[in-house]
Length: 310
Image 1 (tube, rainbow, N blue to C red):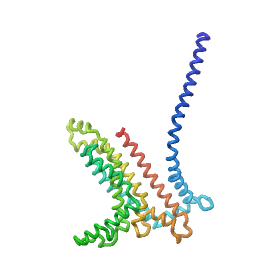
Image 2: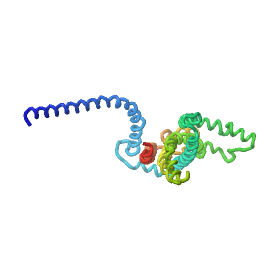
Image 3: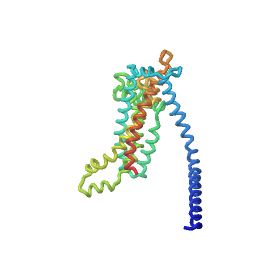
Image 4: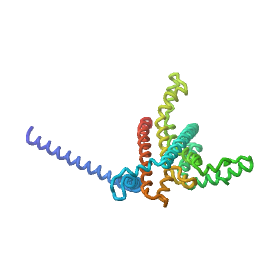
């Protein structure tokens, strides 16, 4: 190879290097607007997730002087706080289980309607609205409907002689939270599970029948294994949704602080809890740990469900 050939190789290498640099610059220029678009979301996460988590950690694991301590965690052994955690856990699992089963059944029923039909559109729209219909508005709706003097309560008592509060005003106690929670758990299940159910390909059923199987065989061998990850992922999401709910319980419950979010409110506002100023932070830390476990499990199950959604 002569001098001219080596010169051509060097020139080609320089051009390739310049092209790589230009390509990198173009990629960075294209990424910059996308990164700017994430700034509002990043600020939201920082203010409403990272900052409260940091405050909970600082309040639960450090003294007012900034010294690390585990003494504050002893509050978690208090029978009242243990009872609040137990109430939150069973209430979350119960309402999530009922919401998951009823929502899955409603989603299956929706498969009988055309995807672009009126019935499907109404259920989709109603689920989107009702899943967000919580807080004080939902509490007021239940009080006005089945409260002590609610429309349905008075109608049943005056017309049929049925007093649904004969054994006490359960609607304002812990069992009374089950109905409002199911109210927003079912539509949330429809929103999250219906797309997975609609993703079952008709060809899978046809292949099963062609090979001599039955519809039961299809659901046992194909449908349930494919949908199980999506179902459990939605179930875990419902648990997290119920465990973190606060406003509905705060507006409806009148008997103390039966669940963890209400215990945190009591710890923050009570003027009689002396010497235990960090209890709210410890409770929040406990909630963060439980929520982190649930959301990690959700991410693992959702990753498995994504295999069939690609």
